[in-house]
Image (cartoon, rainbow, N blue to C red; front, side, top):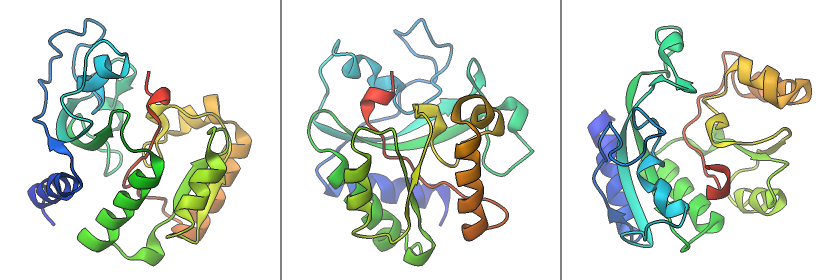
Length: 207
């Protein structure tokens, strides 16, 4: 699939699930002095999560243009060293503002990955953070689709989504136990590592 096909199919799929398609916000946030550039998909919705603004719709979906060349999200040093770090990219996101929660989010993610994008089901694994308040519930939901739903230890925050983990973050914040668990996962899946395809997270970990 081309990038356009992935983007269009993502937006179309979630529009079919009752989401309103919203355009990408500017790369330069108009009313956020804390950021020089829009560096994540949640940036345009920051004031909604803070309760400052009302959402345009209970469910929205977008393809947000992002730039990571400064601040804590600076991927410049990683560009060219691997295949997934870029300075400019689009972040696909489906957002619920007090509407649906993990059960529906997980179901739709699974349908998108396997029914729309035709990824092989036996190659997909899910990881759940043990420190999540609803870790067991999440693992139970994943268990309806995936036999391999792994519980990982350590703390969780938005920038530590699987597929974007960096060794320096792991060493400093996750601890050796987490590293050992990740190493075990990689050994089973692919000795060359894991390709992360998405994150499902609670907004309370965003801000």
